[in-house]
Length: 434
Image (tube, rainbow, N blue to C red; front, side, top):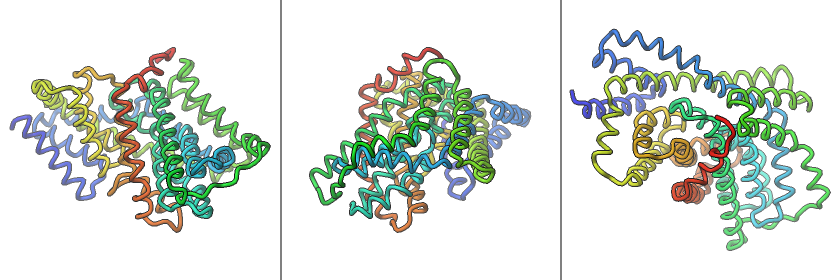
């Protein structure tokens, strides 16, 4: 059987397994094992144990549970409410100020959560009822939070970037730093678009009376722990003081200390945070192991090399190839979660982009923005379902219609990153280490 035919059969079988509801990690591992048995030989199956052991003992896999633990512990201290209160006091006077406050809160919460659904759920529970009570258009209220939640996997620390770094062996520290400028830029684009829309259509959002300067500054008192935590985590990576894994340990420790200081951490909440950290980490580990088993089979059959040579031999413009990859990632985002997209696509795509001379760190940001779009794209936009489940009194139609305009803003931001790569590469190029 030719390599091309094997590749087509693999894609068809993967779609069938996913259609049957098989968990992605097991589907990938199953295809890898079956492929090894039939095409490489039964003796190659013994290497699966080594693949699993190497994946499980990868030091960078420790980064994920520590960052998840940091986010869970810090969330229990009520930082989401405090961030929204501060953003509300400072930004509510702007056109669409409450929606802009939601974007700002999402950006702030993203710097400690690393998760898009967690960001959307935490902020949405506070901000959407507030916006609806003040007479905001329901589409704007739902859409701003759904879109703002996507910042959770772009602004570091990012779970998606950790997975990208583990799969491609690109520096996670550089990926984190590369996401800062695009993340801030995307938050500003969202905010500017909201302000312009409300200015043109005042009925979307009634103007809210601003608060006094004393109240504004007073609200910052509860935000300082977030600032300390964010600077400690990202600053230590940028300065070369700590690796991403070490910075995750610093962040988790500081989160526990701060939550304890505010007397918001008890055995019950800490136990819940540990359980959620273990759950997310186990899911990611099984996904990586399954992807690595399939990747070992693909490598054994030289399928990535075959696809890379085929693409290069066509003499297509490298930017045409990149745009096609973006379309593929966007399509996959309509059906799969970000982690699954990366585990499935990167073993094939990454060799191609390196062969075509694209910066791997830059491509990490491009990939992250693409999977961000999938978070608010039907039929499997995770943020859409998270908001529906966590915020009472809001319909899926409201959420989808509200999120759609922000999808085009994400595409616009992606275009800017592709046209001006230094937006993603300049800051990590200035790093002192890693």
